[in-house]
Structure formats: C-alpha cells, structure tokens
Length: 392
Image (cartoon, rainbow, N blue to C red; front, top):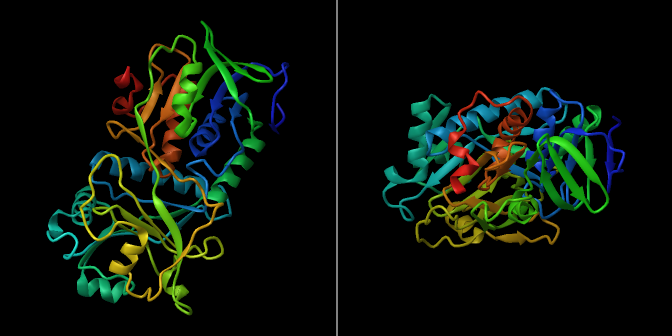
C-alpha cells in the first residue's frame, strides 16, 4: 500500500489489519509499533495531526520518573527506555536531558519531610533511580535561580520535543505505508464476528481490529459503537493556567535547558520547563488544581505567584499569552489510572484513554501495549489495573 495523507479514503481501500481512531501521540505510537506486525494500518484523525486542541501539541512536555506511586515510577522508567530506543532512530533530538527538580519551601509547606519533593526522592532512592537531594545551601550553589529550602532532582528526566517527535512518527508511518486520514469524522463503529467496520462521511473501512484513542473526545466516540449502551470513561477535564515568561535581559542563558531543569512544586500545583532555545520564547510556568488531589492552600494561585515566591531573579514578570498556544488539557480519570484494554463486551475493539496529563511521558509504552493487544493476542505486561471493564 502506498503511504497517503488524505481527507478521505476510497471505497476500494483493502481490508485493514488495524484502524486507529485518533492521531495524537498515542495513536501514532500505536501505529509505529503495530507496523512491525502488520502491513495494512490506517490512522483516522478528526482534525489535522498536531492541531491546537490536541493534548499532545505544542513545543515541550516533561518526561520524568518522580512519581509517588512506585508502580508508575517503574512504568515511567520503562517508557524512558523506549524513548531512548526511538531517539536512536533519528538524528533530531527527541529528548533534552536536563533533569526534573521538585521544590519545597518552609513558608509554603512547613513540614518538608511530607512534601512531594521529599516523598518522591525517597521513592526514587528506594527504586534505585539516579536522584539527588539539596538543602537550601546546596540548592543555591547548584541552581541559584531558585529560592527554596529543599529540592530533589530526578536526573534521568527532562523535556520532550513535540514537533520533532511528530515528524519522526509521521516519517516512520510514511515509510511503512501507514494510511493517515486527516479531517475525517467517524460516523459509525460496527463490530462483527470477524472484525470491525468503520464508517466515515465518505467511506467504509473494514478492519480486523480497531483501537479507539481519540484523547479527550473518547466519550463522543463511544456512542458510535454498535450496542455500546451506557458505557463511558469517567473523565474530568482539567486545563492548567500556563504561559511563557521572559527572564531579565541578559540572563536568558540562566534559564535554558543547559542550566535549568524541569521544575515543580506539586504540593501547590505549580510546574515549569526551562527555555528550549530556538523553540520556546521563555520559561514555561504553569499552575493547576488537579482533579485527584487538593493542593496546599498558599499564596501560589497562578504562575506569576510561583515566580515571585521561588524565582527571585525575575525582577519583572512579563507574561507571553499567545492565542496560538496549544490547548493543553488533562483528561483525569475517576480512579486516577489509565484505561487500556478491550472495550467491555467486544472482541475486536480496544480502548486507550484517560492519560491524566501524563500520557506523553508514557506514550511509547502505551502505544506498544495497544499494538500488542491488537495484533499479538496480548502482552507480557500486567495491565489489569488499566482494564476498561472496571467502569462497565
């Protein structure tokens, strides 16, 4: 099959081994791994690849292992190994290794031993991950940009370069003959005895298996499945308040990926990325109230507050709000776990959803698992925690 990127497909399209609905990073990663086992793969995207409302668009996302749950920390480490393998396939940087620094300050969270930073460090140390602790003096000597009393550094961490990753995945798809249908609305999903029929406004596509991974639109897609009934994924959408901030003139280098790690004060819902020179116009700082925990009540209620409390070098806080910035949203699941596996009651439909704002970090692992479930009759990984049937 020739590689194509069309707004529609013809009725003469041969039966597909796999159809993937959703052309975000999870869908493209699924196609990447599926192409090892199948020749006929189609990805259907309702808009364009990398459109502004997609959760995986923009310039950077953090990649880290510093989760409080050992299960997700180990999983993040597994995903990082897959990211490293992807990096070896391209000459363009996919990951910038600058580390991830979790901060804590007495005036905001008085008991430093119970902060996210301290608990994450203990978990990483217990797991044998490469990490380091800083008291106030050590932090000032290493990262004088910050004002904090304690910090823990996840060394095998940094930022992912989203446009480069998209280019790599699309180039691989073209080389493998994956058919990518952009601006294509799915109107029906019918499972039969031997496979799935995908209806669009312009065509009918037959497939052995289908993966439903449209991100935040999953509950708009599910009603199109024949016989689905009331099954839905219990999601809450959380949109961070974030922007780019310009450092003082002449000090930009202090805040780039060569001198500053990814940073976070998750007890109060704050996080940030260093300047990725040539790609981002300033320091990215965000603030959010996650659906899965109550942040500490403090003076930090927006990105500007975090900068004033923890980045004293910013004598003037200049915010860059760009109407073309991505619509970064977190699809938080009710029980705070991914949703990966067979759609309950169906043999040929698989579901990938609920990435919790962390999906990009785990994307290679999630895509690999979905491809294995679709084309290899299962996976060696224990994914019972993610079973979609828990919401049936």
